[in-house]
Image (cartoon, rainbow over the protein chains, first blue to last red):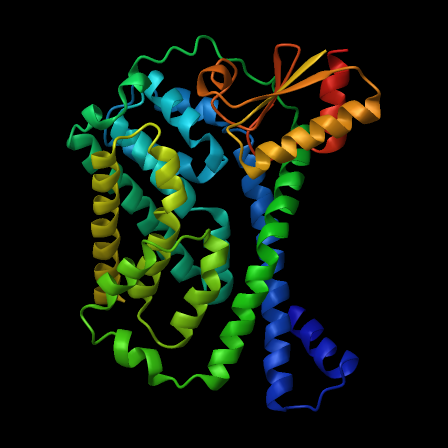
Length: 316
Length: 79
C-alpha cells in the first residue's frame, strides 16, 4: 500500500516521467520516509507505554543489592526502557549508589541507556532490515553487560568522589500512580517529542543514501575502510569516540557508510562509539567520578566496541 | 503557593520552568516559582529531573515533560 502511495505521489501528483532516474529515486525516497516514520511512531508509542512502568526510582529498587552478572544483565535491559534526561545522570548515579546498586551494575545501566534505544533500533530496522537492527540491539546489550561487569571486577569504588558515599537524601517522594489512560497520554507526548527531534535526521539520512548511491564512486571508501583493511574497525571507533550524537543524528553517516560498502561490523562499531561515549556526558559524570575512572571507562568501552566490530566482520 | 523546579539547568529544565510560569499566569494564581539546582536539595524529592514540586509535594519527575494542561491540573490540585 505504501508502495502504491509513493508511486502515486511521484507519477500522478508530481507528474514525473515514468522510469526516469529522478522519478525512481524520488519514489524510493517517499516510500522509505513514510515507512520509517510510521515504524518510528508505532514502536516509540509502544515502548513509551512500557517505559511508563519503569521510572528511574523503580529501576533503582530493582537493581538494589543485586549480585554482579545477573545485575549487569538486568541493568543493561532496564537501560532500554528506563527514560532519563541526561541532566539527571548525577542524581541518578548518586541515587543508585545510595540504594546499594553495585558500581559495575550502575555502569551497565549508564552504558546501555544512550546506546541501545528504540530510535536506534527502529532506524536500523527501517533502513537495513531487521537482522542488522537485531544485531545492534544484542551486541549493544552485550557491550553494556561486559563493560559494566569489568568495571565491577576492577573494584574502582575508590575513584568515585567521596561525597557520593556520604550522601543521605532521606525519603524521596514518588509521583502518585498513573492510570492507564495517563500512561497512554504520556506515551503520546513522548512519541510526539521524539518524532519532532528526529524526523529531519531521518529525511537527511534517506536523502544522503539516495544521493551517494547515484554520485559517489562505489570504491571510494571501500579502498580505505573496506573488509580488506584490518585497521578499519579501530579507525572507525577512534573516529567515533570524540564525535558525539544521539542515535538519530548519526544515522545519515551510518547509511552513507553502509551504502558505500563498508563492512557491517565496522559501521555498527562506529555507531556505538558515537552514541555511547560523549564529552558532555563525561563532563557531567566528572561531578561524581574521578578522572582515572572516567579514563578506565572510556578505555574499556573502546576495547569492547572494537572487539564487537571485529567479531561481526568475521562472521557476517 | 510555592513552586519549585528541580534540575541542574538543561534544556528540559528550562522548558519545565516556562511551563510552570505559563500555567501560573493562566490560572491567575499568586505563586512563587523557585529554581532548584543543588543536588542535595533535588535529591530530597527525586533522582530524575526535571521535577515539579508544588507546596512540598512532588507532582512530576523525569522525561517526557507533562503538557501545559497537565501542569495546570497539578497546580490546581494543591490550591
